[in-house]
Image (cartoon, rainbow, N blue to C red; front, side, top):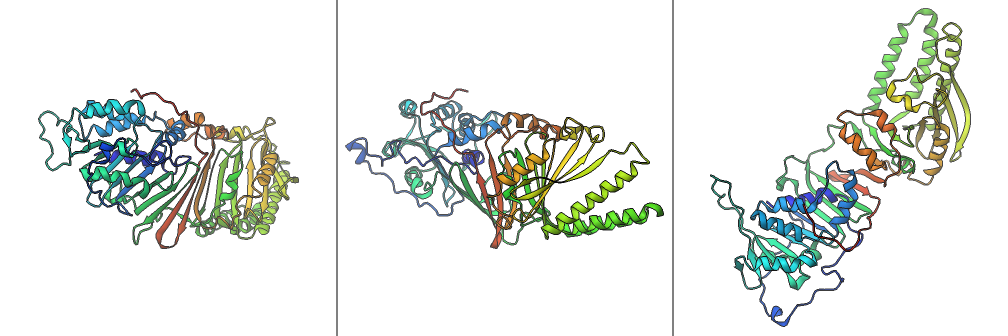
Length: 525
């Protein structure tokens, strides 16, 4: 079925759209009849267009959307080849190739599955291919009196009988509507394509679908998914099936630190809230206390003191976490705190106690690495920055983390606490303090933790696509490669919000539309 064509378009342009909607004609004006004779042709009555069809889409500029995602794809993206592959299922291979090469992917694509199951597809044609395709259609069986033709069926494989009851496909170059190619299962369906722009093309991109009615190989837990927007922003609404929870198997709940992902030096990052954090904290505290009770008597008091301070710190965690990368050789972390000031004090007291105890222990065990805590080494957004330093770290850390060590073999961990951010912010890397100060300043005007309290997830990616390809090709996660990512690519941002009634809103922010020359040449493949 040609239904795979709109599905491909949806996959490539989810959250994408054109920079501006192109009306039916390239000049932006309503199409006029080519001749008086054409105006006298009596067209069939169009079929009604449902407001909530099984599937429908309008993509104003598919080529721009494809151009945006192509650098991140591990395989080349050739829309003409995809269309040819799809149309081979409904007509002979030679004609399928001609149809695919005639498509202008700079101009709108639209489709709809009507209530009766009929599909209507509108494809823009290249100006230099329209006349040739019209000549090819003149050789086919005519249907009706307005220029429509019946596409020859795809020949059945040797030894197989054509499937009974399969729909026939008609084609029409609608000169009265700007000259697009229309495919449908009836003459009424062909004429119905004229209403697609008004019904579904009010924004540069629109798509809607009932997943249960589509021939897709997985069961999606949503009754309907609808997206609207343009190449800079797309809002996708996904309505969960009644009584279902699409995220039931994921231990997440509402609340992120998504505003902290706005920093320009962040190559990749994700934030969410761990739903079972309270149980996890209790388990950790119980395990720590049990280990302390097993310590020898002479050091048990030290262990109990450290454990008490650690337990105080852990109890301030409210479940929100953020992990980010960037600039290269730097790791960013953040956590939410129910009491930011208490968390700050507890962390400093714990680290200072660690430093003091290690300093004493080094008198007896010289191989212990030196550690120190430097207070208020810098400021960012008015907040003090503390710096914890582990010396001789290169030989201490696993090989995949050694990129975080500076030229003097020190692991620098910079920390700050912010009421606006909602917790603690940490940068680990050679230039940790400077990068943390910059992070605080650059996100000072970003969304506070309160503004992102309804988000289930927030993520961003600004890595160079050329650096991403080796990571995608590697079946195993390579932490060393991740730490080399630089924020030199266009920035993509995604957030997921949970609303009442099982509605989920996915907000996709893109880098914007690439500039594509108006002139083009026929696709070859």
